[in-house]
Amino acid sequence: MLPLRRGRLLLMASTTPSLLIRRTHMYVTLFLFPWLLMYALSTAVMNHRMSFASSAPGGAPVYEKERELTYDGVFAEDAELRTISQQILSSLDLDGAHGATRRKDGAIVITRNDLLTPRRLTYLPSTRGLTIERLPHRTNVMLERFHRRRGYATGYALDTTWAVTVDLVIAGMIYWVLSGLWMWWEMKVTRAAGALALVTGAGLFALFILII
Image (cartoon, rainbow, N blue to C red):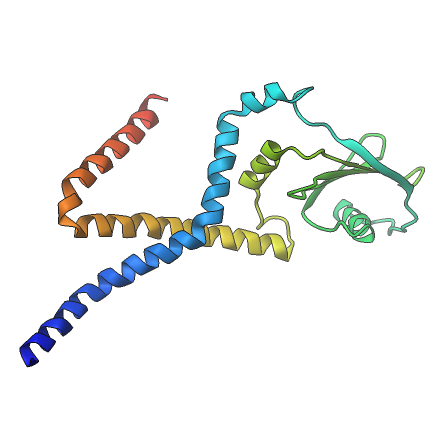
């Protein structure tokens, strides 16, 4: 019994790194699933953009007026554009990642980069008029916004958290590839077919890089 038990312990010790990599590979895959699905769908939409554009009347979506109001907020005389835009958005419960510009006529245009419902707010200081517009929902356009979503530069904690999560997804994808290579090499019966797949994929990728 002792030699048999020792043999089992040696077998377990020899397979522990492999088991750990396989299990981690599986859990990383489950973690990556929603991001990989969304990035795959958004890339497909971008790759076939003309198919969606041709089916949409008028081409690119345009902002639709949501409401108009008089904004009674007060700003300091030396208030910066960013301060003004944040105050306006906060007062409307729309604070978040955005950009702001000032037109030649003095109007302040705020683009609220919401993933699901982007809005454009136009504030005219001379009349205190504020116009709020929104983009109509189109799934393909929303997927493109998702694909290009960034976070570190916005200054908002939620966007920074999103950016950190995307970095974790990137690290997970790298580990996914490396652990896949490990598992392929470990299974001797698949080495030949795996090598063919690896060389074919790498060769095709290199060919496109060189000729496109």
